[in-house]
Every structure is written in structure tokens, then in C-alpha cells.
Image 1 (cartoon, rainbow, N blue to C red):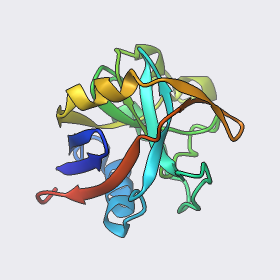
Image 2: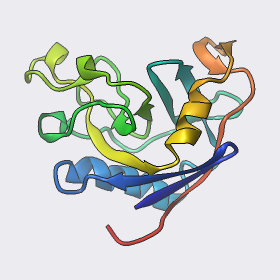
Image 3: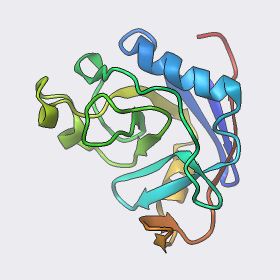
Image 4: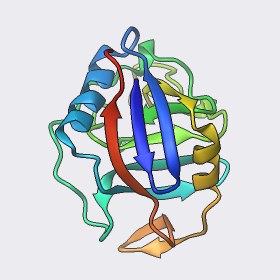
Length: 166
């Protein structure tokens, strides 16, 4: 289990190591290295998702490890409270950034192994703190440093820790 400490409260996440082992291990690797400490939720879209894990408070993107293979074909669905890997248009470009769904976003699910069909890999689910996720999803946003939907007041991931063995 992962415990994400934010300036809004704590979010407990159970990782899906059975269906998405490489994706879960990727997230654990970033968490154990302290990579997420001090990063922000830099993209918040009410009724959709909250995204973080890549930018510091000055909106500078942190350097990441190599991207991972998309495991969305074996993953659970993008439903409210699930955590999934963010990526570019390349289906195998996920590295550190993730998002937590605040709605059932089934249009993000795997459909086929073509570029548009790959979807976004769900690798866990919020088991405690969904109220914190909802609270974050309601913050006021603006455009900043060339990015839209950035919270006006920083939503900070203070630390991410393992609270029991996976």
C-alpha cells in the first residue's frame, strides 16, 4: 500500500501488482527514491481527474527514468478512485506522471493495441482519502508556465511512502 501525503490530507492507494506489475513497480521505484516529494498536482480538471508526479512548485518538469511499456490491456477500468499512468500520444511513453480519476472515464480504457486504442493503464485504487481527491478536484485553476488547468494555489505532494509490503 502507498500513502501519499499532500497539503490537503493523506491518500491511501492499493497498487494492482497482480495485473500491472511493471507499472506498479515503476511507481514504487519513484516513490522509494523520493522523486514525488515536493511535486505538485499540476493539472486538475473538475469532474475528470487530478494529475501529478512530474512538476515541482515552480512548474519545472523533473527528469525521469525511461518510459515503461503500457500494461493497459491487463489493467482494471478507469473508474472513479483509480490511479492511472499519464502519458503522451505515444502509448508507451509513461514515466513518472499519474492521474487519479474523479469520474468513470471509460473512454480512457484499453480497446485495442493500436495507438488510439491503447488507453491509460490503471495500476491501483484509492482505498482511503477519496474525499481528499474530491477536494483537490474542486480547486480553482488557471494557466501557468504554458500549462492549462494548473491550481492557483499549489496542491503539494509532500511525500509518498510504502506503508506495508506489496
